[in-house]
Length: 329
Image (cartoon, rainbow, N blue to C red; front, side, top):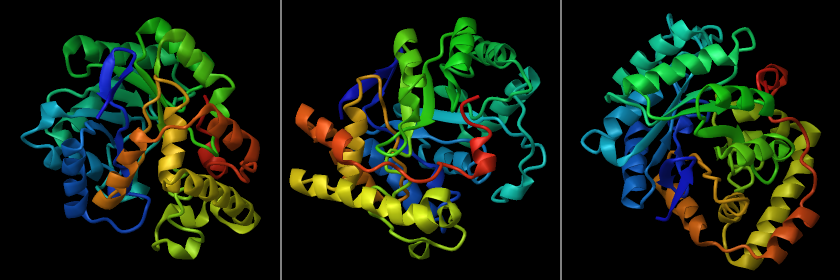
């Protein structure tokens, strides 16, 4: 597997998003998930993405078990944001409020280190920007963790260009993680230019449109009970019908290239710049192996221009109203 660099952190060209192994996407199979994490390393994918709130708390523990004995061969990224003081593993309703305070930064890392079974995290993100705490305070506390050796690099998730600039003035930001794909291109306006200017790596999550662009489901009824996509704005009502046409166009172009829709979607993200390291999520080895093959897909200038010209506009917001209120802050 080729490598890419997020500022000064070298990782595999694509990473593995681990959220769905524990939360949000229906039933979980921890044995298959662990084998997927281990298979990733065999294929050269060493960059794992998790967070405290995935589960909550259970995803970090799963990764800790899966990487045991090989921890230093992986690059592990995790995230903090919400209070976990009273969180019960697996019960999302027990997650507390956002808190970007210095005190919470320091206390959060201890729980992550314990669950991951490690004494350092390679990349530590603020999961969402807390509008009630200056980013300078949050990043200042994260920088102290770097000085202590508990964290090697710091990042932000779903932050605005202005916040990224302010944060980077306090301590070098290694990576910004934001949803980015063929149907989520908002970062192109301000966030991506800021990252390029400042030399910050960019980690697109959901490069497959949460599986929709890959053709892995075409209706909410195809999904497990409890899968949050069953009520997602882009997957229901008139939006769903409009977006099915978008997914069909991705499938058409992929077929002409002799690749899967998922491979086309990931290859498109990779083609947007060497500072891009997408983290397609999966909980199965089969899909992991298909996704990894995207690294070898070459998209020509004509391919990229055709995609821009022919893909219909996406219908619907990425999240519901509450979810949209905490992004791009």
